[in-house]
Picture 1 (cartoon, helix red, strand yellow):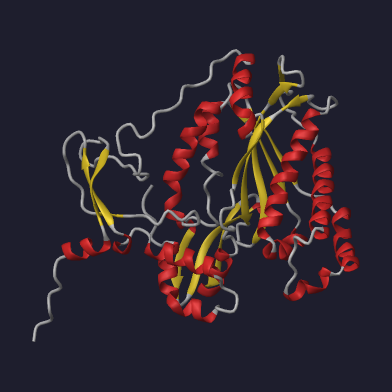
Picture 2: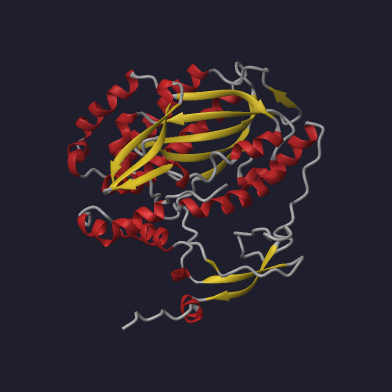
Length: 396
């Protein structure tokens, strides 16, 4: 894919330190750290390396190192490919489904002040909902396994927490003696999933309140009072929560391609950026209310960066999680059983970076012969500066 003409890094550099100074009243070190990482990504400031083709010996110019921050749009491709390669051996020879659980917009202000708690509840309650409804003999009557990916943004970069779940269309019978297949165009009832998810999340939110796990600041301070909090929650029971189920979309080969759309996304990709003119950023967004029509949205540079920073995750927060028979404590035992009951063998472990060093995530191919490039020398920022040609002084 061609390099986009405008990148988030360009916007961060354009905003400079002035953006940080104007917004110090709410910016935290975690926000500044991400901005600095994106600004320095793949520049001489992070050092670099020299690559040589293992086939024809071609040497490329200095490649600058990436920041590897998980919020950086440029650093996710290699991470995604490694993750997908690791998942390849876990994909079962059956159809797969896509399920999405979304939190109501009413919860957005509370989410922003309690990201770690509420994102954790979203993961837990959506997974419990799928597992519980699937185990019910009236529906599937099976133990399923799946992974969930957290996204926190809308197309306009506003807060919109939801989890994408990719699920095999079936599961282990409750006695683990056979594979239970779901019907061709049906998996689990959407209405039941909505009600169970809503009940579980609101109950978990009430418990978090009682345990003193929630913070209330600014306009939400009054919610710290139990009666006011209970009254604020009540309307959540009177609205339908959004649970989306896509019909079975294909087998394991297609799933690998499908996963790339969701696993390592950040709030906005560089390819959606259109222009930066007179301090105004314009980017593309998809209007789902009007047949996914592509539209342009202009925002001031400050507003764009503020929206981008809404989606910084808490330190150490895991945004891709496994559940059911794919959970870490069950996978080694139950996944081989799933392959056996489906009449297939588990795929062998893929080789790890067979043609390159293990610490080179940005493996690329030789522009001359297509062979794998290998790192032959690593350079610090100071060494790169020493290798740079001297500046030509201006003529007198």
